[in-house]
Every structure is written in C-alpha cells, then in structure tokens.
Amino acid sequence: MALVIKINPANSLSLEVGIARLNRVHRNLPNLVKEGTRQWGTTLERDMKNSAARADIKAFTNTLFTSGIQWRQRPNGNIGLLFIRLYGVLLDSMKPHFVNLTRSRTRLLAWALQAKSANIRRKASEVSSKRLDKIGIYVKPHPFINNGWNIGRPKLRPILNKQVQLGLA
Figure 1 (spheres, rainbow, N blue to C red):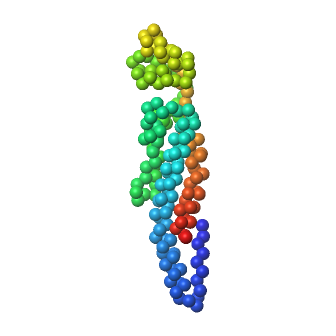
Figure 2: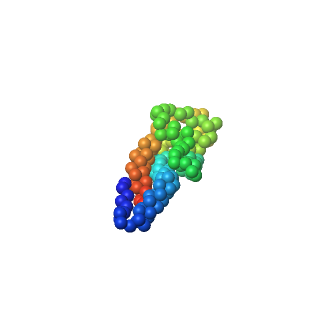
Figure 3: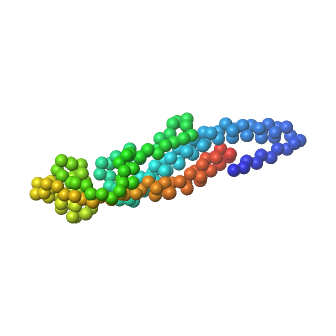
C-alpha cells in the first residue's frame, strides 16, 4: 500500500503538512493493525462456529457454539489466539470407532436418545428401559476446523487493507 504526499518545494507549509501526515500514519498504524486483527478474529470465530454447524455437530451441551470456540486477544496485543475446546478438536480429528452405550454413561445415553438415526434412538431407549444391558454404536469424526480456517483465512487481507485505508485517509 502506498501513500503519496505531494509537497510543493516553494511552499514550506506543504512540507510541514506532509511531515505531520506521515507522523499521524506512523502513530495510528499499530492501533489500526490491532483493530484489524480483532475484527478478523471475530470473523474467524464466527466462521468456525458456522463450519461446526455445517459439519452436523449438534449443540448438545451448547458449549461448543458459545464458549467452546473463542477468539482471545489482549487489548494492546497484535496477536490473537483461537481457542477450541478439546472435545471440539477430538470431534474433528478422531478415528472412527465403536463406543459402548450403557446406562452408566448418562451423557452418551442422553445424546443417543436424541440422535438422528432412528436405529440408535431405538437401541438407546432399550438400554435406558433396561431391556438391554449395553450396545455398541459406531461413531465417526465431524471435521470442521480446516473448513472454517479455509473460509476465514482469505478474509484477513481485505480486513487489514480496510483498516490501513482508514488510517491513510
């Protein structure tokens, strides 16, 4: 990005105005970059949550869609971090496997009773009504982190360019 300042050599006032403008840009640019990073972080957080919803992750405990994915940045920092709860990372990257569903695994049983598959719901109701002791269900990953990153990453440059343009105006 270039800033062109026209200075008339015959007029010393235009030189002072040009220097003052350069000083203002130099002074405001770090704050504009911080603000641009914060804006991009909130955009990335929103894109990750939307990607998790598109990956068919249900808001069963309602923490992944609220505080489970967060952008954190210090008020005076240029660097921000995207925090994703461990179970979100595990949902994204686990290997497909079988899980035993018993009455003692109450959260898993509650999830299975609300599952999309009618077969899993039927088997879960049989376990909860004590007709079956346990069943095995096959669980698969729900990849969403790379998809959210691939959607949010290209938005960084336009957001930073917009902030720098505000500073140069």
